[in-house]
Image (cartoon, rainbow, N blue to C red; front, side, top):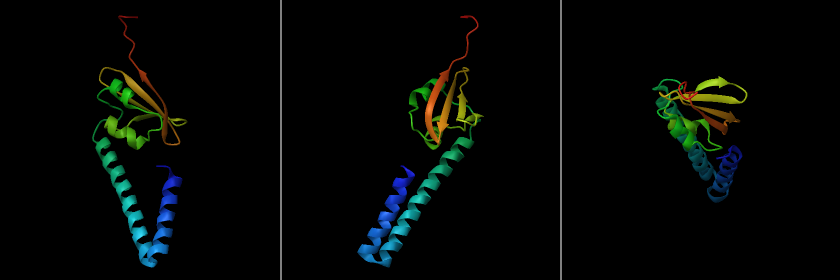
Length: 129
């Protein structure tokens, strides 16, 4: 969800709570906003703790990861697919790499926290070259 949309919904909830039930409506709206924020925080902690259990930059299958990626995905959406933290290789744009046991790797570029570009890099086979 867009940050502006979230803040607009929170403000709308506060306004509706105030007009419908007065200060009790505002308390209800604030409670719901805090609950929503706690759910988001809990999800982030769960994803990060799961990703921290695996080696950095390792993925089971680079080809499957490449097939599941979509433009606009956040890093928090990519980490459950990889089950590990990516190896950061560049800062501008923010770029992460995941490798599998065959040597294939997926390079993901994030701009403003969203996936904009990714590519599958396969190892060069000396016998075929």
